[in-house]
Image (cartoon, rainbow, N blue to C red; front, side, top):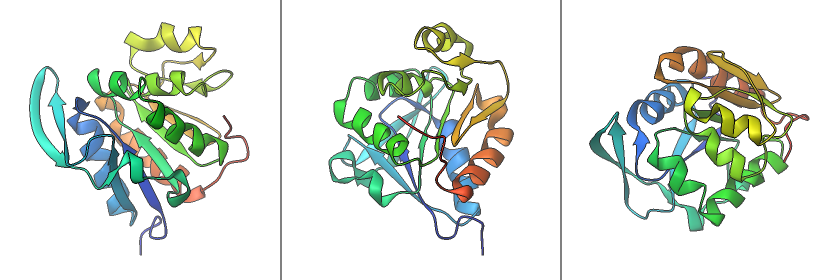
Length: 186
């Protein structure tokens, strides 16, 4: 019986996510016993990237229009350059993200993923990290940015790059197992 056997986790993504930043954490969550759903504004599949190259298609489990944060215990946002840029301009995606924060549920984002959190207006006063390319954006949005492989702040887990995945995966399993965090807020 895994530590997450009673947990249901949403991975919010669009086309253009960095493949390993979705597949690797998803495997870690499933290995820990979680039920994991790929949630997307797209209806059938989303396409991955590996660096600059387009990779395979991934089956969407739940269309964003049919998803509710109430049905999930945690949220994961993978990076990639295109994925967060598409999500951050989608009001339904932003509202979905905000709902996790409002409910005190754990949220994890890696690489460029925290860009979505800027538009959800949930980074002000929060400790986090990201890929260096969006450091200034996060600081300008009021985040306390630090250069560490994984940063946890009351249920908010962030990492910089795929190199940090071992630490990121261990921490998301721990935080999702803990459940709601009083300090997690919108």
